[in-house]
Length: 368
Ligand code: M6R
Image (cartoon, rainbow, N blue to C red; front, top):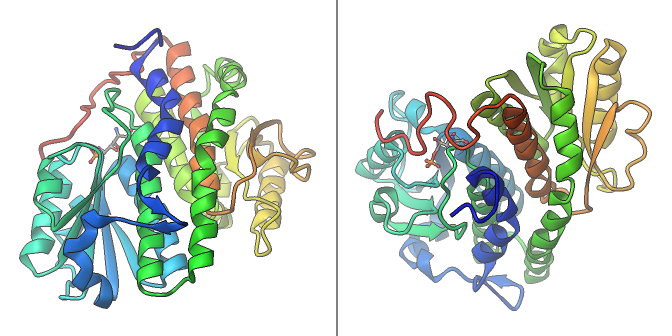
């Protein structure tokens, strides 16, 4: 069933453009987001004053992007919490709280227990799930399915981009329903989202370059990942992928945290991936990230920049550059994640490891 691919993971990364396109399919009508499956939430959507996103692992990083999108577009306060932390700390839930769980499998025990906890205390629940009829989807007030198709490899890849797509659609749906954005603003964002699958195909073309990078780093013992704003969860995801697949120590940081501690880790030769924001955005964090790159470079770091096509400002400082096609600032993460997934996969392969079945891990964690 790998259809000629060396691993399920490689196949599933190649399916990312379709995962995004199929998750959008049928849900955009005349520039507006139409989600009839959310009808059971009509009442709460009118009065919700707080959203809590619950998830684990990769799904929680999709959740951070969901938070940024929902807060930006619909102006509703959002918290993202790891499911297993949530229910053990007496969280405050009111009848105006909406709990959104994100789970590829829909069977993750930690997330299911957290959803039940919230539901039993009166919160409304929405499940973002990739598996039809899964426990969490059935046990929630409404389900918004991602259409990534079955994901077999333990490392989540295409499900992640589908989760981000579904969360963005939900954010725009909320924004329109609550009139936080006008129809033309919603349509403009929807259009940017619809443009992602083609751009992702371009990104996947960087496979050979990423493979070469990975092969040159197969003896690396530690890799750091930096990002800001929507690049931050991508840094976290890049680090998680590398840990789980290549068994290499990896950490993701918000670039703004560097001076608050992590910069002490930088020594000559330290490999650091940096997700660079678009320089075209008016309130761009681009200059700040470029100055972060200068700071670590001055201490000997080997910098691999994920930067937008045409961004020449990074060139004097980056040792390697992976190019990302132009997308709106909120949409760059949907493109920047694939090279990091490919990098982890290629490094694991270079070390002779089983890419689809990393040690100690299960595809779906159905125990607490
Ligand atoms: O099925 P879920 O989305 O609930 O799974 C959540 C995590 O266990 C999962 O994303 C895990 O972190 C992956 N192995 C990451 O690649």
